[in-house]
Image 1 (cartoon, rainbow, N blue to C red):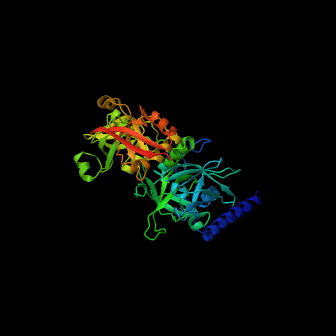
Image 2: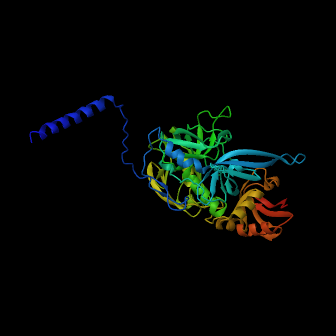
Length: 474
């Protein structure tokens, strides 16, 4: 025992001495502790465009982009488009342009920007491993500047959708794309703002609620991926604000949750099924907030409610201030438009609003621009779009008051065939080539079967007499 005790004491002293020396020479280490985060949402199931599941991670430390970039880069592709330029006298001049795209499913669906493929006669997609594919356009949506392409191939990499609602200001993100035709370029930045409108898209239905970041984005990045540090797609890089034509610190991406809905519609229907609340809106300012007894200078003011719309049916009124959609706060017009843009005609949403200083809640069934809940097909939408107008069925009240059957023109596209006839919105079409029009289905049927010259006959509610407009289907 006396022989063992000195050995034990000697061993303990040696161990303590080793620990002491190690602590003297070891560099200090940064230890990052991740506390439990509340559940958020990301994509769910085999279909990447399905509903979302709880997000259970926190944004990683600022320097940890390696795994995210490694997992995402193979699924971001280079897109080269070919288009024909020239006028009547100089046809046949071909031009090419490049952009980026993101593979979102193992069966070859690719998301990009509408402006990347607009007017193209051919699209070539090059993967990170240098494989090349010819792509077809499944559908485009100018209102969100999104397009869906598809390629046929084996063992295609793809990116999982994340939940853009869970993004926080200051969270680290990375942008992946092909700026200046430099393939697989990765840049990092933070989320600078959400729900940002920069007034670059055209049309009454445009939805601008961009994620703003300071990740470097340049020409060629359009259609590329904005991802979080977990490697999930949380936006499609779309635009920059610049005076030089190059990156100056501000880039903008379409939120992934909006992308998911638009792309799912393009895949399933060939056209976006856009639900309309049926209100004319305005931003809330400080003077308005004080006058309406609002708790904060935020929300969306209702200037007018469209007759027979979902908002009208639900009892919303002029002067109400919308502050939330389905439990999501809507502090600004872009935020509200983004939330509503995720739903189709026939979907019911919960609208939270303030009236006379009190918070109220109403269930609203969204309708289409034609004031019904019917989903449109790609063919009928394309026909009306090519001609240049949108129509809706007459309401029972309108039929009774005017003693006519027909369809009402809701809007007319600039530069279209219909616009060149000098027709005005609110025109009620009662006949096509002397054949009666009772509803939109009959109108489409008559237009689809027509060839050569077409004569539209009808009336205006506030003007006497009948009016005629002619155009050619050729």
